[in-house]
Length: 398
Image 1 (cartoon, rainbow, N blue to C red):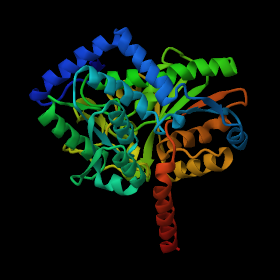
Image 2 (cartoon, helix red, strand yellow; image 1 turned 90 degrees about the vertical axis):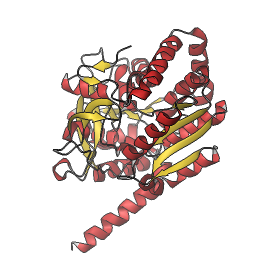
Image 3 (cartoon, rainbow, N blue to C red; image 1 turned 180 degrees about the vertical axis):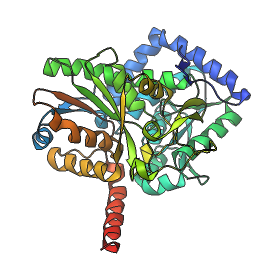
């Protein structure tokens, strides 16, 4: 299994964790070629998750924008409301195969935490989810969902009290209890084999999207577009189109208040190479190598790093990465709700905002395919608070 992507990736962890990672790699390699494991994974994806997810032509949105036709890969319709469950189902099956008793996870927006708590309930695992105190406050509905599902939500009050710090605490817990605990990492980051394993479990998004687009439209899209925090939904989409030279792959990072302000979470667009959470990748760090605090209106993109394979794709010009600011994401959130009756996750709204901006550059015969990675129920309070802060700021500057 590939452990590096050019100079990126690897296993930058405490020596005590290496045997656990090597065991995980061996078991995952076996599972990939185990017909019983694969059959059970496919059964659960179909009958429990509800795959395949539709590819939907957003006609009113397309007419409003002018130019290209915008299609949405509806990962928001999966059980639990996001793409995260594609991965947690696979990792839970692996944990069962390895006779683990307990699942732990980190979460930002809460969707990965919900997806992990969901599979823990399904398989009968004990479950603990680490979540930054700031994210607990802005994603309260998902905290309640996790607790209803039987998970313990551990508030993390160190550092910026967001996703980075939640992942730090999860790794500490795993280091102490690796014998009975399986760490369900939610994105294509972390030490090998997690980036490759999570990408494989999420590749169903891109494989379905490519086939669906050919079936419905008779051709491939001009661009496939997805938001990027750690980058699992984007990489899952890109995998289906990596061999298609005429399809542009675009990852949309969280531009926050703007790259020029330094108040953002765009690791590729505004960062440089370093090591975080067990892998070498692009990071947001200061001149001394200290990880910088990040900002995004979206909790799920509020992370100072990115999956190592994205760093490689960026360097090799195999994918393009752009940043969308908070106001643009909220505008896209509102627009999709009002024109299509679909409330997107704020994370997904970043990708949607980029599609809305570039659609007029294309002809009506062209297709833009956006991964709608999750639904926005969780974001209602956050969006309302954002609007109130914006209005107060405008009033103060009059």
